[in-house]
Every structure is written in structure tokens, then in C-alpha cells.
Length: 272
Ligand code: RP5
Ligand code: MG
Ligand code: MG
Image (cartoon, rainbow, N blue to C red; front, side, top):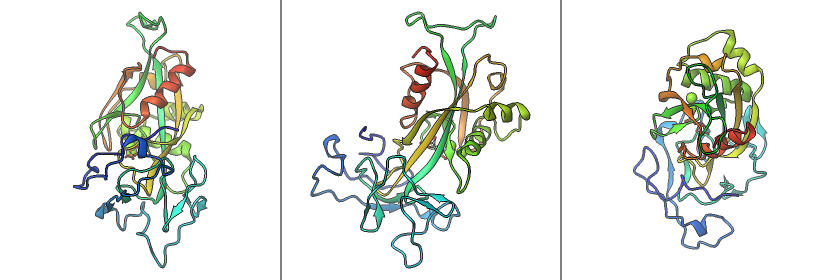
């Protein structure tokens, strides 16, 4: 299991709170770090939001950890997480900050990431291959995130009780098509079934010791480029740009999205 990087040793986003230093060798909870003393921070604006939990500790709010809690999925892909002093503990390790930061849920915050791909083609419609690897080049729909300006998969949070397949199509439509209903084609394309390439922890810069993002990433591939591969993309919601991006080993994406995308390249025997 990897040691998260993006949620360590930096200023917590949209705050003046500096994370307590966590060197590589002291990420895991099993490693002794006696003086570890992370600041507690929950962004004030999340209080009272419908998508957010109540503060803890609380007399009235008793989350059912490690299970489906009403509509809220508090189950981690990484098995049962520990509860320490009444708060769930990040399954990867220390982040240098406690509380929820910008995240709504204590424990896992479930997201879904649609990796929409097509083959790169020249003007006459032929597939384009890489001169070094000789393999055909894939393109993916990437958005540029407003919050950290990084290019990313157009993913989003799973609403309580929402089926992940609904989240995938909804977030793609919001962020890459600017809410425009392109009719049955997009509907059918997502229905045709994606292939799961990742489920688990996201090395996201918003993670804390008590709240973290987990995702399920699915590949939706337009093999002949006649479906979503034809669409004009328009950035919407919290995306500031959107484009078809060539997939390559040098691709730098938000969080650990490049690792998820790499799985797609391997699976489709594409250039990476
Ligand atoms: C990521 O944040 C997840 O993998 C997903 O892409 C995204 C969900 O958060 P928002 O886009 O809603 O901020 O790290
Ligand atoms: Mg979104
Ligand atoms: Mg998003």
C-alpha cells in the first residue's frame, strides 16, 4: 500500500492551516511518532450543509462506522478502519491535520471517476500510434479543476443513496458537457457498461487524519469513436477547462488519477 503524498507537508487548501510535518517514514500509524500533534481543522462553511455530517463529539449524532448508515455509505474499500477517541482514522496513515477540513463526511467520502476514452485518430480516421512504443494512443476526457488548477478525471462525490453508475454519468455531464443533455447517445454510452479499473483511496489534497476520499473509477471506452468521442466538450460546474488529452506515461494529473488512467492503457494495450 502506498504512502500518500498530496495530503502531507503543505498548507491545507482554502485555509491558513499548515499541516504538521509527516516524513515518509512516519506516515503509517504503526510507526512511532511520539511528538505528532496535528492541528484540528474543519472548514466553517461545511457546518449545516445537507451533504455534511454534524460535528463530533455529539450527544445526538452517532455515526454507524464501517457500515451502511441509513443512506450514507461509511464502508471503506480498505476494510474496517479504526476509531480512535471517537473519530475514524485514515487507513493510509498520518496527514498532519485532524478534523474534516473541506470534506463533508467523517471517515470515507465516496467519489466516482469516469475515465472516458477514444483512440487518437488522424484526419482520415486512422489510428495514431506512438513512434517509440508502436502502440496506438488513447485519449481521455480530462477537466481542469478550479480548486488546484490541475487536470483530472471529471469525477465527483456520490450522493447519499445514489448508485455509483448514476454519479458517473451525472458528473461527466456536469463537468465535461456543462449540464447539456446530449440526448440518448450519452445515456446509452454510459449504460453500455464501464469497466472498473480502480476502487480505493484517493491521494487527494483535502484528506485529513479523520476524513478521506475513496473512489471507484470506471473506464467507458468509445472503440470506434462514433459516440461520445464525437462530442464537443464544454467545461461546467467546478471545471474551468475540458479537453481530449493524449494518454502517456508523462501525464500529470490531480491526486493519484494518473495511476488509475494507466490501468486503462494497460487493459486496452495502448501506448503509455
Ligand atoms: C477526487 O476528487 C476524486 O477522485 C474525484 O475525482 C473528486 C471528487 O471531488 P470533487 O470533484 O467533487 O471536488 O480526488
Ligand atoms: Mg462535480
Ligand atoms: Mg468534480
